Image 1 (cartoon, rainbow, N blue to C red):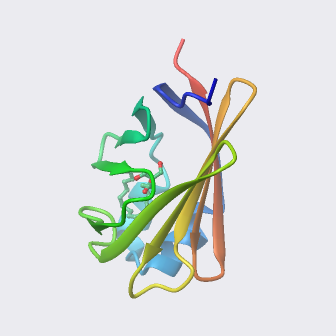
Image 2 (spheres, rainbow, N blue to C red):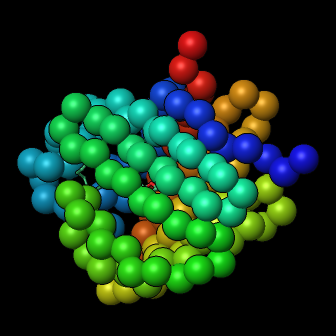
Length: 135
Ligand code: YOG
């Protein structure tokens, strides 16, 4: 059975988010607000089709993709850039590459025990987040 990311996940830790936001060019005031947020992820997985919603009290973000199919992602409400984005499996890891103005941009998800892990990368900065299933 392949891994199933489906579920509702609440953030429990967020390391180096500030430097990741600086790398993305997010302004000071927005970073101060964003640093206080406790994102919740709602993931729907149907085979290789995914919807990942990120909810906060400030802004929400949604991305919809199929594994291996490049698409144009507009990071609306985040840094508002356009990327050519593709997500692939690396064993049970979800590995996303976001090609665009920012070098070395992407993210990786994996599941470890009852935790959802997320590494967000932009240029030389890596933000590491951990989520747990909602009770
Ligand atoms: O997740 O792309 O799960 O899309 C990254 C925030 C703060 C807005 C969040 C709202 C980067 C202001 C999405 C944050 C900082 C700061 C929650 C990460 C940018 C702007 C919406 C992401 C992937 C993997 C799926």
